[in-house]
Image 1: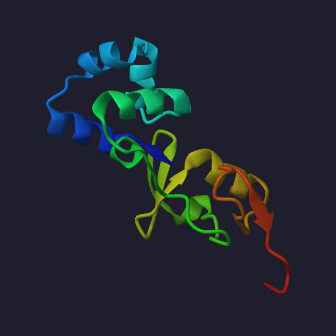
Image 2 (image 1 turned 30 degrees about the horizontal axis):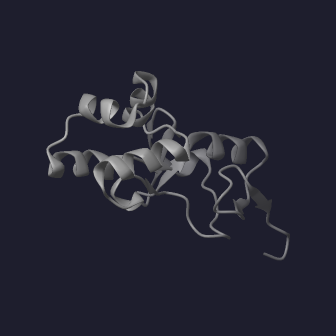
Length: 128
């Protein structure tokens, strides 16, 4: 799950307004909207932000709620909270709603097998 929460903290620390960031980077208002909604943006945009704010990428974006390879994907009955396309399981871990729904639609029992690919999964064998 992509989160731009670090960016908003960085802007506050550096006393930079969102519209000033738009002007500094040349990004569109649509890109700013994507950032506000924690949606993916091009890496070139993140690079422009880092250069404009003179900060590392960790001060702009974080990836969370993905888990390690082999992490079981929860079923819908394990979900405690739904917020748009984010779901939180009973342990408080955030999950992509599409991933959880696909896991359920395929009968469950899948686990993460690639951290880089959001919807990648592997069916557990009968001996696992």
